[in-house]
Image (cartoon, rainbow, N blue to C red; front, top):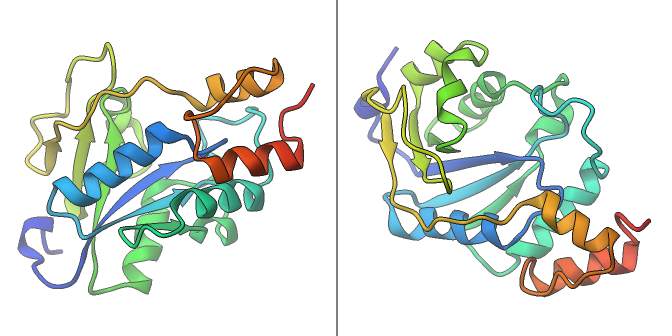
Amino acid sequence: MSSPASVSNGRKVGLLFGSFNPIHTGHLILANFLATHTDLQEVWLVVSPQSPFKIGQELLPEQDRLRLVELAIAGNDKLRALDIEFSMPKPSYTVDTLSELRSRYPHFRFVLLMGEDNLPGLPTWKHADQILAEHEVYVYPRPGIDASEPKDHPVVRMVKAPLLDISATFVRDCVRTGKSIRYLVPEAVEQQIQAAGYWKM
């Protein structure tokens, strides 16, 4: 198996996995930064129907969350919404999605994007060794989190992206309590949330 560094052909694409429940400005600033300030040509936002780490969390239907992502990134040719996990077994495991993407796009180089808060748990992921053998991992900072293992792994790269402290939970709570979400989400996303009545009490 070739190491990530030895693969030189094709577009280099970052994969930002998430529930996006809903997508917010923090996601977008981060995705656009990684797509324009690193060696990535694009960032694909992979909408997860069910994370194995978030079982039991209240989620909008996957197609609704995908629609919000599509509205949020409209007009940005560096970003793409991906629904590949919708047709895969649930819960979704990153290693399986990466394998499917490599099968569909054999000439693309996929880079896993993750927050510093998730890095310590990476060794516990399903087939983590396979992920690290086949893919680079770009890690962006999270407020109040110090870098930890496996940050020194040869395929792990720490990226000095903007520190962002916006959460989907906060956005949902604002909607439920009738508070403004202006600037927390793109205008088109805000309009869709209001029109569809998402998270209303």
